[in-house]
Image (tube, rainbow, N blue to C red):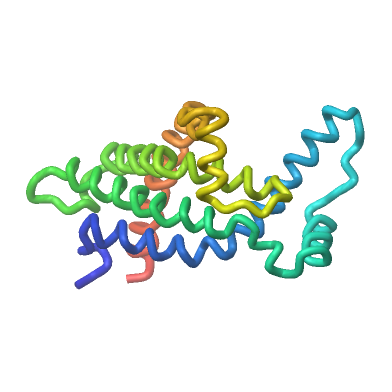
Length: 198
């Protein structure tokens, strides 16, 4: 069986498993990003200049908390990434499958089917991961050692369930063209490389 012959569930599972491993790279970089954003916002509200960069923040976290400090929010990153990429690749492949004319392969489905698949995958990804992404960011900004579940419950109790989706609309508006183009370029690059390497 060739990779091209994998079904929707197999592609979704591949995305799910790949996301587990990518979480170990994403967590430290997102921790630094989120903490720098929070520090900048605080500096702006106080009319101060920010004197903290990514390198210094990384060094400070490691000095104060050890290397494990760089992985604050790892559980929530994994909880976000794995189901997110399951539905991302599942949505993409499933949409392409549904839009492929009978008697043709997914690779022959055309640009619109590829772009629609990318858009559906992106919408599915963000709709599923948005609450976990919000919780992860709160954990990473906070100096408190709270669990993913406790932070989620605190948000729901204090702000309501809809707070978990605050900001989803602009994210979806951004992701539809981005993921449509991403997969269009990906599929065309794959075809191009296949043609020149064969």
